[in-house]
Image (cartoon, rainbow, N blue to C red; front, side, top):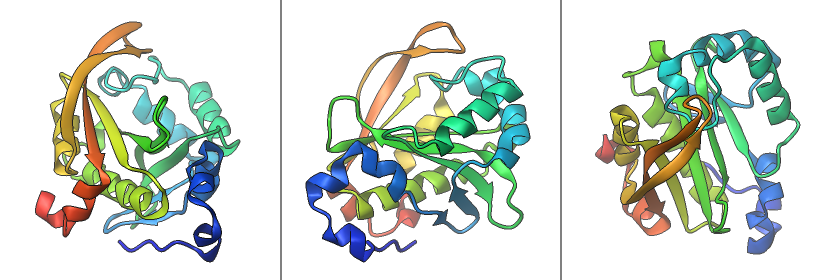
Length: 211
């Protein structure tokens, strides 16, 4: 997937392109072999609520409540389309028919302006089909090609073997472990922290070598 900077992007200073409030407005639709990543729509609410209202999904995502209702889904879409500062949120959809599969996102790191954080989830019927890895590749490529960043971070629960496999396929390297809050678990859960730096990303001649 090739992504080029627009003339407007090229004219901005590196500091301006790093500003969190630039991130939302600079989120292009992304196309991969099987997927289209685009902003969530109101038409996604039913599918979003159906797929997210699953403890197997919610307990692996830090900020997803359980149960997850249609009201939760509608509020998520509303906040996303309102341009919540610093977030670049995508609906993961099938390219062939537009079916909603889940969500992925990039957002500024809480304490490091040169780092973004990657997050993603898929509805259980769409697990083990390579969609998460494909979506993550598209987001990572876009981020490094259009942002002045040094690295991207990703975290997963220590029990989430599938998510760890996606992270590793994308070239992330283990950095350490810690605890994060989980809405669904109503408490803190142990997670692993991984990082992909620009030099490592540039050394990967093609994503196919990581599969």
